[in-house]
Length: 232
Image 1: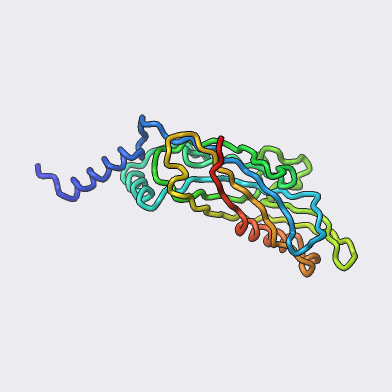
Image 2: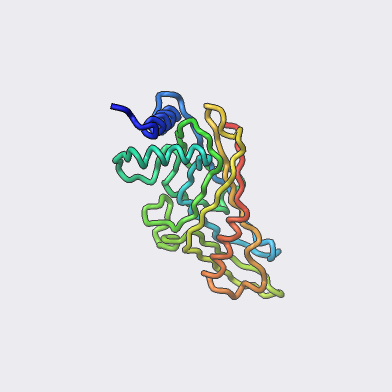
């Protein structure tokens, strides 16, 4: 029986995808540890002080470059694999991390390690998400449950000390581009993700609701996040 040319082409593509690691491979993969660090200030309020500055990082994921992502989608669509639902995969850390921006002192805190297959990765996708009740480190009073960020403090406004509270319940995704050589070697790598919101509060915003200030915090986080490869 003659095999259609199109079927031969699909077979070759699938074989190429499998050899690239989409079906699993015995070749060594990467070891990528993600660490989080941070700081907080209000650049529009010189006298602002903080009593709380918490951010819930819900997940982080390595994003394949377009060609590699297309190859993987092709294999999954033609040969779906049944698997148990899990928020964590070889390219994704799904266990939430409660980051205290006042306690890091600029020093990175290791979150978790991924073991992705060798491939081309173009970005690291960071998800800021509301903390569910199973998030490690949540206080018992429920003040951080279902919150993605909570900032509290005081600021001097024309000689009058004013309290402010910022509460975010929304989610945000930030894609951080990776340099091509950042994960090129099949050797342990540590990536430090730094969260350092600054321009989110000024004197005109002090009287705003916690939700309005919370959204301002999330927007500032999106502008301020950075990534660097560190030596282990």
